[in-house]
Length: 172
Image (cartoon, rainbow, N blue to C red; front, top):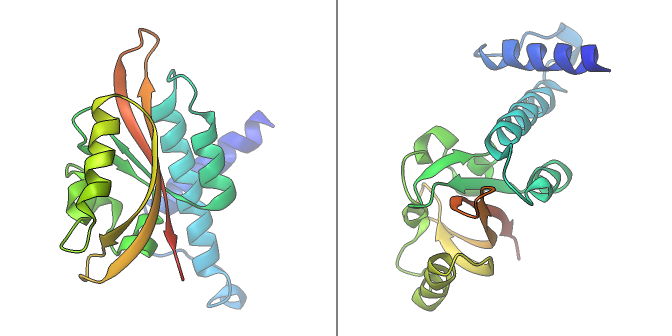
């Protein structure tokens, strides 16, 4: 089983470096996007395992991502985005590389409820989890309704080291 996991990791790393997947002619148009999504999901899981290693009470994050395909955004204590799962693009239009180094405020705009963002800020300042639904803005400027569960992540010395957000677009 260990060899299979190692093979899978190396295969995903090889495919992630290619601009396009090269598959047999019969599968073109049928499975390419599905396989590419699987590769990206696996790479996200590997990244999440590395980022969350040694952080208490975070096993649910990877399970939520794998089973429900929710978007994962991880920030440092100053709320600078350090990781975003590949499926962020489907929800917001942004590639993960476009949000890393920025703050989640980049998704807010005119119709984002200030009471909700103030509530989030209070919970973050108290290092408490929160769960809200809020209007955010996509890259193209259109609105989307987003359900967010945010969790502080602590090290073994009980110091805040990350903030983890599990997000999902709510479609009416």
